[in-house]
Image 1 (cartoon, rainbow, N blue to C red):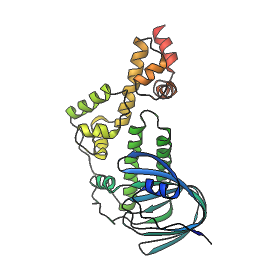
Image 2 (cartoon, rainbow, N blue to C red):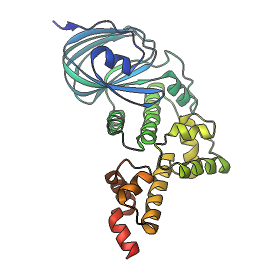
Image 3 (cartoon, rainbow, N blue to C red):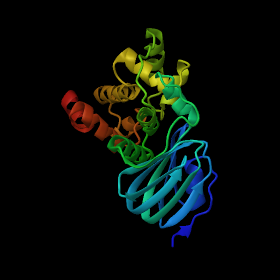
Image 4 (cartoon, one colour):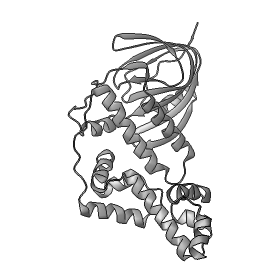
Length: 293
């Protein structure tokens, strides 16, 4: 007989992690929360959550019975399977086995921003629940997001917010049939404002939210508008400028590598070496020796 887990009436991933003793992960953005937790056999009820919930079974063996919107599912669980529960939908679960889940709660505002980029208007209750489905791209995005926020390296905010936008878009397209519409690019002046801000704040842990505010756009709209204008993502542009700053300091100064790393927004010398190597095909130390003789 499975143990009874109390009725949950919570607002997102953080509340659930606190309620059952799971791990609260740093929030990737203002509109997305993450947590991780392990469950044994249990029965539970979640009453009309105000956020959309996406569960990834990271490690799982067992059998799940669930009910939502009058539909009942009974499926075997295994690692990599996902369960989606839309906002406003009561959910009932009975699980027998053991599972370690990563939970992502996606706020209404994020999906609403995504829907404005399509011919499908978002509304509460428009999305349908789905249990134990296989979607490798979504599962990979959640795992990458979990790794990124857990590392919390300098620069993680921009990368994490970028993953959040991709994840939200994939989620909305899967459950709504969304088709992308054209995105108006940033103006040349707006691009200059954003790039000048990047250049002046390379030593800060910048996020896409900071950049979007400069031009009065939401994060999702900004990410697409920047790429439409420049041909590269804002994250790629930011990393490229950091690498260029490292290159310049290696050429013109004798600063220790650790100081250069911090001055260019990297969390450590090792982090700088990894990123620099991917872009330049060599290490900072070797590059300095080659260019300075």
